[in-house]
Image (tube, rainbow, N blue to C red):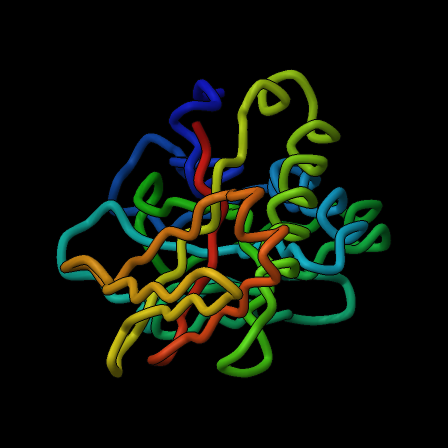
Length: 219
């Protein structure tokens, strides 16, 4: 397990899947192994402002997420795992599949895939949000880290990092004694810190641009 100071986004990082001897062989792994890795996601269901995001990628150059196929060969038939263009996946996590423990297959070579479970915040439904909601999301993320156990409990959530896809890519903060414009960095990211003055000042947050993700920033 990585030290919590390195876990800015991921709960689990760099899990290499389907390790075997021959690199040319296609991969497979028991379902129970994936279920065990994804168990932290169950903690996040207790928090309405948080979500666990599964994603898959390749160690090999030139392999796009849309080229990756993963499926579960269960007794009830083949279950395809959806993977979008960003590599976000949706593995079914059920007790029935855990009891059956079928093979999970991939069309990629053995040992070439990486699976990641990320802690993110649910994106705001519109362009405007009271800062009190962002504060509440920071508090929920902190409680989630505590419940995830000692490997995470020492991490302090100091803010939320918003990732923009396009548009103006800026955040405006308005309050009784505050008017602030924040511009995204070269990677389209803006971090809103945990600030008691913004909470007490009834600050409103305005997002200008299309958001991709909101992730806790740890110290």
